[in-house]
Image (cartoon, rainbow, N blue to C red; front, top):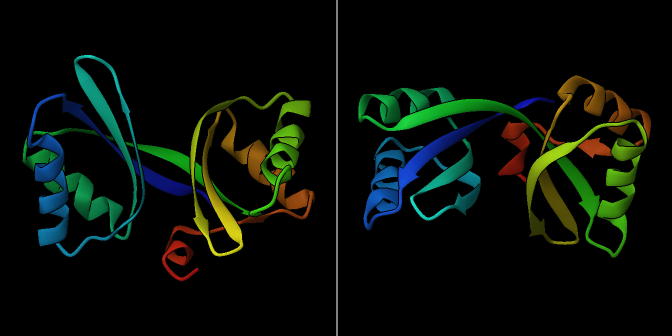
Length: 141
């Protein structure tokens, strides 16, 4: 259930994001989900990919600063309050959400979540009958 997310630190200058996506495209690596957070000087591109290890190696070799992070992908109904219910389960047990990003797929929402305790988060989510998605399943939904 743990998904490896690739983070790339990018200078805020024209063409850097294009360069990353071109490298991935040339290698046949699909981006299943992404988020970009920025500051005045740099951005953090977070991605769920079809081949994270290959992307990590290629981007490292091209001089990009990259890292791997364990995240979860939670599947929730795309209705008001569904995400709040999931977050409440985590917060009641003292789990902090460091960041998250989401996207809609039909009547479902897929939420990529980074918590301060991934293993405990998995136990809480699954024991409360909520569904976690594997990385390989994201493109199939």
